Length: 470
Ligand code: NAD
Image (cartoon, rainbow, N blue to C red; front, top):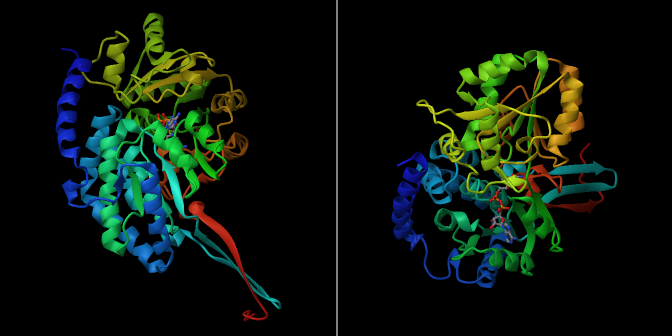
């Protein structure tokens, strides 16, 4: 039995076990009853969330803080279980890395402190600018970060005073429903209001479409591929769109090559390259390319050099100009096997190969631990290629260099929502670096790394005559 067959067998046994638990998703934590959290229809769910929002509007800010604290405490112990369930159900990524991602979402998503009030005062009086809630937010979550997105968005959106209808990915249904029911129960316990987080028992594309058209949905937050983001943008509702990326990683001759290699391996192999922010290609200046590749091999990459093997790999990874969905988020071993290539005894963290600049592996967002490397003559050529590869998605780019003016030039011209200098891509979402964590990076609509304030409506409150003590 080969690795793929073994993985399929284990997955089917475990999925059966998981489903037998998940027939009653919320009962595992003793937390749902009829008309709470999980509904039969989109309409019933959205209306329940809308009623919950009306009550939530009357609660003080400290209630929101208590909710955020309760979520952090209440989910802390179940991250390994959630991560395993997500990896198992979706068949993508790995539990160990998902624990890290879920922990970042749980611990490092800001709460109400993110809603910074600003004021103007003068002889004529005072003006306050404050973030107030929108109402019920329709939040679509991807299969690549199903639980991370639900945790992250719940904290941000509830901190901003909203209720949430989640459209989980049908491919991550069981784990998402379980998490939503569990979080609803935690939130209810913290504030006494039911249905601040809801969804339907059978998430489907149709349900997502109904949600987008529902009059009680005030705002859409869409985290997913280009299809679903453009569908939401056509809905007529205000949309925060967090779409696809294809992050290039540029390495110039001044970079600390050993560190660059280590960071690239860490970033590009995380959760088998599922994160939208992960390095999807390396563009390296010729004179340091050999050294970088050598170091990447030392840090656990397997380099494919045989032209036939490279072609076989390309053929299985990219089909009809798009990533082969069967291999998205699979391990290097499964991908090597699918391409008919030998799997080394010590399974590599990442598969690397040198390619041309226009190789399908470079220009397609593949979400697999297969990293193409392109040589360029110099920094200028590398930057031009990085711009082409990122393709105006405004998502993420990474650069390794010790030349400050080049770093600044690239950061300025790339116009990505996240630009990481001399670190792994995940530094851009606050893992091992400064900054808060988010799994909803609003790219086409421009909000960038989202947090509570992104989900607040900015309003002005004016008081005339006085209240200036200057
Ligand atoms: P996907 O687009 O297949 O699915 C996302 C969600 O949209 C799912 O809930 C799915 O059910 C729904 N959906 C998709 N097509 C639909 C349709 N026609 N009608 C109704 N609902 C529909 O994405 P995925 O494969 O789960 O996630 C991967 C993609 O998401 C990648 O492109 C990745 O870059 C992107 N992503 C972006 C961010 C970000 O913050 N910018 C974060 C994570 C993932």
